[in-house]
Image 1 (cartoon, rainbow, N blue to C red):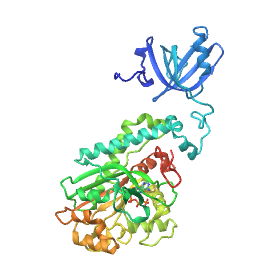
Image 2 (image 1 turned 90 degrees about the horizontal axis):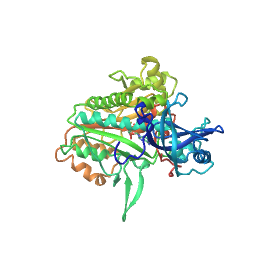
Image 3 (image 1 turned 90 degrees about the vertical axis):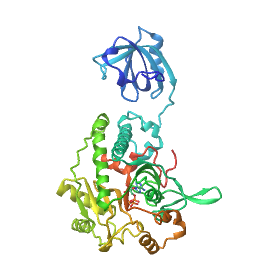
Image 4 (image 1 turned 135 degrees about the horizontal axis):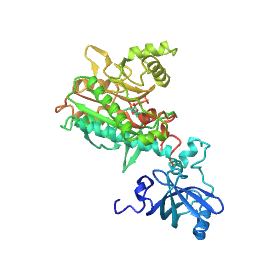
Length: 442
Ligand code: ATP
């Protein structure tokens, strides 16, 4: 136990400690008083410990236990004893109970109540919501997901970087930018590290990733958009095509899912979930084929149009039904669709098409990327087509004039990934304190 740890956690209690004195701490989940004996269920980060108080053993402590409101924080010192009745297989007979923080009543949100509260009430009282082990499990799994992603990328020679989140220009179009006041001038919150990660490709730090917040002033209220999301951004140089980039995206998913399966077993169990090993390679569905599949499913969509939420969902259903597959790439997006993405490389022999891809998971886009245009002259032409003010991209463009290798990369929405992995209905469930049009607190 580290010197700064002053309590024993439930997970650390083993039969070897039976008969010894321990100090535990946590929240009072429940107190059951049977007149001569009372059972206090103490919840800590990992589980629940039963504290059993006998009136005849210690009347003062017995009365104290009866007076503690639910969800108060207590520290209990006592003798650890094996118990057939207690769920954990042991109980503590207390000698000392300190109330470290008394909870007010009534609670704004129940912690053990069977009745589910709506998401808004839960988010408004997130600290109480997170006392539920199945809610905490989501974030423990999210942490393991990120750990798995990092490990994989580092093992492949990628370097983790940090780029500015206060920026002068956006990369994804003006409508979703958050303007901010930056000293005596205007600036924006970064929508994506796009321009910086491409800039780094001209430096020798040419295989990089970043895991950081990205900001989008999304106008619509959907279950998959939030204003602040964790973006995993990858960029790599000396590639030959978008296929190289897709291979890395695939590696990230396969390895992080395996990491979660291996290292978050308990948490998955709390959620009643099993994660299947995806088979590789993930199928590649060309955009043109995807449109036909969505049409065949009864949706009206024209070639050149975005598949949209409904289209993606319909495609997800077809892929599941016909290929028993949750993860698949949609490839070869038309240039017209990616026109806003002025940096996408178009096919040499078919400039109407790019190598750009999306990776969809259970009918929802989680990754988008491809090979970028690294030739200065062509890039300038594409930017002009998009009516961009070249002056405001000066720092970005300069790097293309002094030696820029071919490169590509993608943006990968971490919460969307976890949302789909855990079958959560709303992305907000995978965010501790989500930000959206109506939510700025807590
Ligand atoms: P969509 O079409 O679903 O709005 P997008 O095309 O704007 O997404 P990109 O700009 O390509 O998304 O961003 C790459 C990835 O970042 C997306 O695949 C998604 O996983 C994630 N992402 C983008 N915007 C959001 C958002 N508002 N909330 C959560 N995740 C997002």
